[in-house]
Length: 474
Image 1 (cartoon, one colour):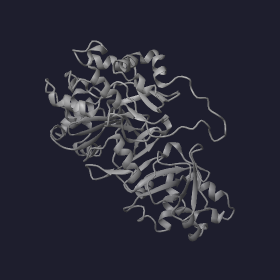
Image 2 (spheres, helix red, strand yellow; image 1 turned 90 degrees about the vertical axis):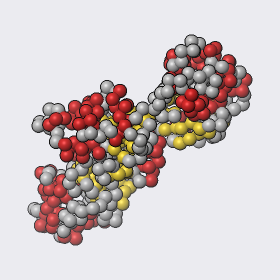
Image 3 (tube, rainbow, N blue to C red; image 1 turned 90 degrees about the horizontal axis):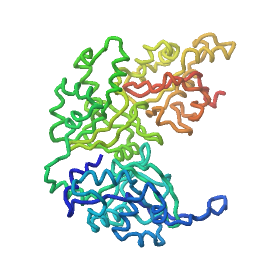
Image 4 (cartoon, rainbow, N blue to C red; image 1 turned 180 degrees about the vertical axis):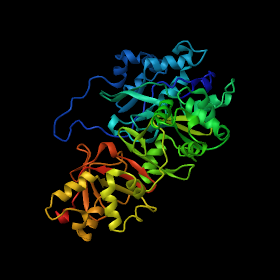
């Protein structure tokens, strides 16, 4: 979160009331939709909307004090990310010299307000991640992971309030222009500096078990020094769930040092990656390498950021002097076995393992690679055999046909369930299979919800309750 106390102690360059987080993207609005129906234009402009909103009365006073009402009543269009009254109260409380808006210099208000205005009109579903240049000249950073986030901390709480000359999105925090924030940091009489990763963990009750693990393994020194790290931090509830998953684990003391070290290093990446950076990386590689030299996969969709398909980032962009922390809701366990190894150890897949062995594919799925295997369960294979009177066992199916069927269940790229889309995927056999997310099927075969996202060293397994037959042999 933005720490106002670090830079609001100055009434000159450092004092600022990042008040109306107002970002607008350069898009044009049409009065008609694709159906030819005319959409009524709201009668109120953005200023009048703010004036009539009880939750934006502080913003209304600030606009008047900065003499910006006339400008924002013009043709525009404008998109305004408008801090609520509670956001302004938090701002005033952050500086002992400010008891009311009148205590903030008008030039500071004007700088802050123009920092939050961009020419254009954009609805929430048109916002995209990345920097947006404001009328004040500096950029606001937009993230669209799990909602709309501005500058890493301000959340849009009420979107798409349309006006005749733009749109208003209400936010829960007053934004601070970087130039003012940096000036305040340089001149802060308290000498406060951004805390290190270790200091943040020490000060947070939510990550006390993670801190205990870090201290036990003597990693706190690394996280308290200069560096550049991204830490995916499991909260206390995540560690409690991990301990509950193993009857031999009652506390961290029951986990040996080697295992605990491997687990913790799997949560750390040797570079700073904000939520926006993760979105960009997702478009390029969809994975990062951790300190344990293993691959950590992440997915980005409308629900947020997921690690290895199931673990969600639920507290993004906790900024530190030596990196970034993202809180997560589960402990990530590094994969220990290959796809073939996992299947061999799971009684649900014994017929599939027999098929792989017969086709000399065990080595393929034991070695390096990136595969997604939609693995038919034993029941699925039995249903296939029952569908043909000439098939009593796998031995009754020709090698050629069996190979075509088995390779039709594999994609040579990693797709966790949170990556999948309702579209066609080219399988290893060369033919396409259609995923339907709403029905949770691939080529009409139901994915087994209890056996999804089984992470292997060379990919991921999703169990399916039916054997898929390629179109060419149906």
